[in-house]
Image 1 (cartoon, helix red, strand yellow):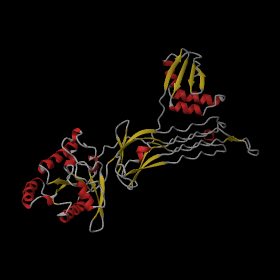
Image 2 (cartoon, helix red, strand yellow; image 1 turned 60 degrees about the vertical axis):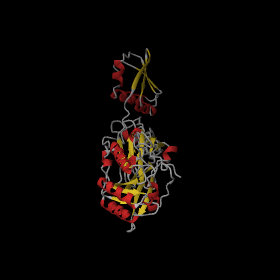
Image 3 (tube, rainbow, N blue to C red; image 1 turned 180 degrees about the vertical axis):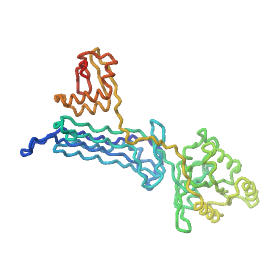
Image 4 (tube, rainbow, N blue to C red; image 1 turned 180 degrees about the horizontal axis):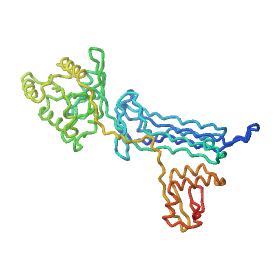
Length: 426
């Protein structure tokens, strides 16, 4: 039996952009040559894609870290680096994606084939050929590629079914779904035999099919964690309507019916207001007089009720006819999710940095962008060093250093680069 997993936490990382390149044309018959460094390739994007052939998040139990391919660095002869391959992660239809850092919903994958971009790959850096101008014909610097985007996300599966079966433990939900569909849930004469949701596909006389979800039994106190609690109620939020199974042989079937509806209301008022078909089960175990009394009492609570026996199949035909009718008439439920409209899958702003005073005359600068800039700087090339210093100045690094009391000839360290501070030079 497949293990049912309906929530998972994953870490995703897009591909980082490839660095540009500093290169020159040196062919024998090319007059004066010129800059010929190519651009780096764009990093791969990360997508979630809805797949109706999946019904659980089990795969994410064994693999929770996903990374798209990095872009290649630029090459000589103005050749651009290859773009990184996109990563498409298949998830069941009905998955809601949340950002763990903000707690906000960023996507609702509610259709087969729906593709949602959750992390954009970094842009490739420009090679030195891109910086050539009439005044600057031999630029000796290039750009680093943009950093990858790393995010931690939570996946929550809300199964998409037309009807949801509710009822106390051992009310006969699993027996019903096994009789009216091809599903084979565990059935036994003790409570909580269903500990994970089961889906069954039921064929209508017209040949069309619809899906019914068998949800593990609720009991009084579920809101406080008693029994299986609310763990699986999310799977009936998208259902068109509910089928409430009541065990007529229970000590107080009416009280059981009211308890379930009370727990539904505690979980979600919208869920409690869903249309319900009431199915009074195990009629084969009672005499006609007892059934008539209970029918009269339940009729006052819900007029749409049916007397059935899942074991003997008594009353199933008119019950199913009404279910078929409701499947056609009731529109699918649209869950109003507060999706974060400001979420940016392409937010590559890593311009933040920190300055630390290591000793009385050495200051250390660290930050994603500074590290990437340093990675494409040749400390032997005065032009590249000058550009690096200019970029630090534009980021406000030198203003920060002045506020920390930097003095003439103090050392500025960034990655593998060291600069001696000169008053008025920066």
